[in-house]
Image (cartoon, rainbow, N blue to C red; front, side):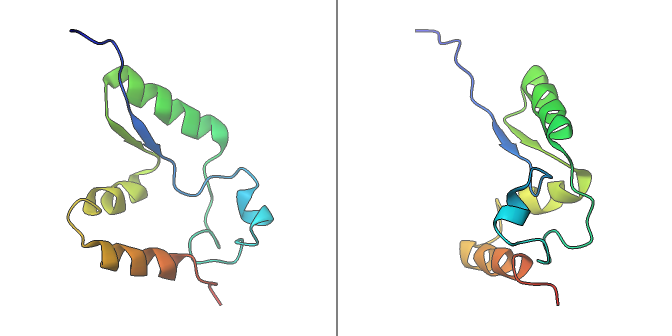
Length: 90
């Protein structure tokens, strides 16, 4: 049986969509001082990835390294890194 269903994932990382303000995360290391991509940029990356048949679309060059390293980095280490990025930057 042949299926025409395809699946892809999108990793936008922090995106300027109002979530950070609602979650009181504006001063975290993850977003403080960074220019975040807006929804239009994220949608463009998603369309491009789907058009090329890429299984995982990642927004931003600086996010490609962490996204790729998640395949080989032990989960406890990834959890600690994620926790540190979400701490307040002060």
